Length: 128
Image (cartoon, rainbow, N blue to C red):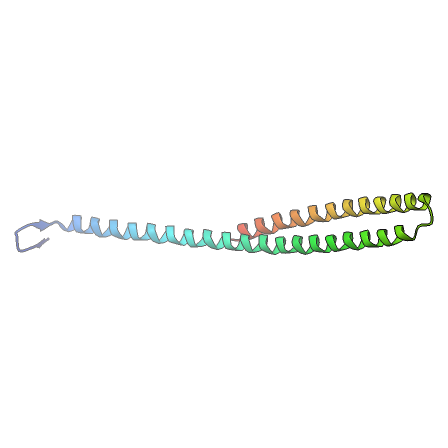
């Protein structure tokens, strides 16, 4: 036991208990901070995966827009050269059919890209 100048004695058991309590609190705090750092890293990795996938979607969307504009210009050029209304209607029917097919394919590709983005984000979150 130790004695201070006022005559108050702190039993060794209380001192040991206090030291252990402080050590346990420090360990709990360190564990908490470790888990917090890990969670932040997981979020950042997940965000990176989502950002990469979003960039893919943006590139695809730009490519699709360019394809549609080019198809529209081609259709307009062919339409101007048509000799009669019957040819114009055939051109329009062909153009609309090809555009609907393109939209269907693009929707499937967007669905695949979105699914991949979710899977990548999930994998990144599960790694840590």
